[in-house]
Each structure stands twice: as structure tokens, then as C-alpha cells.
Length: 118
Image 1 (cartoon, rainbow, N blue to C red):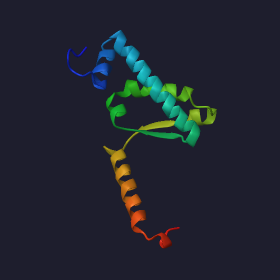
Image 2 (image 1 turned 120 degrees about the horizontal axis):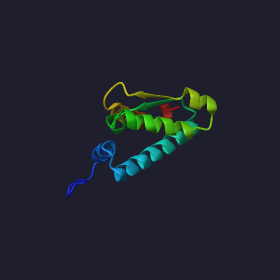
Image 3 (image 1 turned 135 degrees about the vertical axis):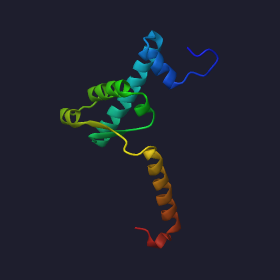
Image 4 (image 1 turned 90 degrees about the horizontal axis):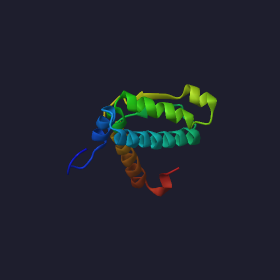
């Protein structure tokens, strides 16, 4: 597929779309692992909204459709399975903003004297 170059997810997805059977097996496993993980989060945290960004959005709508469909199979509650929504992130690199906010919040807690903390 790539000669001596490292194989990237984008290359595998493209090869799968072009009908490469080995690439399709890899994509099927990627979909399965994402779906199992997301289904576990939905079951554990009782959430009904998954915001999708980064590499999953870049992989294309078919990849995301497959993950969404299989994730629903791993959700225990019929109600949550019915109401579960996948939406694209509204800002690029939104996860980065969340990580930065966590750092700033942690720094703020460290800077507050222990007697003033709740």
C-alpha cells in the first residue's frame, strides 16, 4: 500500500474506499473498537450526545455512519439507543480548548490558599 512510507489512517481509509479487502478489514476493526468504546461511555455516563471531531470527522461520513450504527448496538438502554445523537464539533480543535481550560482551572486551584478552598 505505501512502499517504504509509514501507513496512515487516511491511506487505509482511501484504500478501503477503493475496494482493498485488507484495508476494509482494518477499517472494520477501527469501527468496532470505536463503537465498543463509545458504547461503554454512553452506558457508563448515561449520555445521549456524542460530539465528533478531529480524525473521525476527517475520515468521512461513511466511516462515522458505521461507527454510529455499531455504537447503538453496544448501548444497553433502548431509550438512550433511540435518542443518541452524533454531532460534529462546532469549533476546530475544540478538544484543545477543553484541555487548556482544565489546565487553567487546575492552576487556579493550586494558586488558591487551602483555607479558601471548598
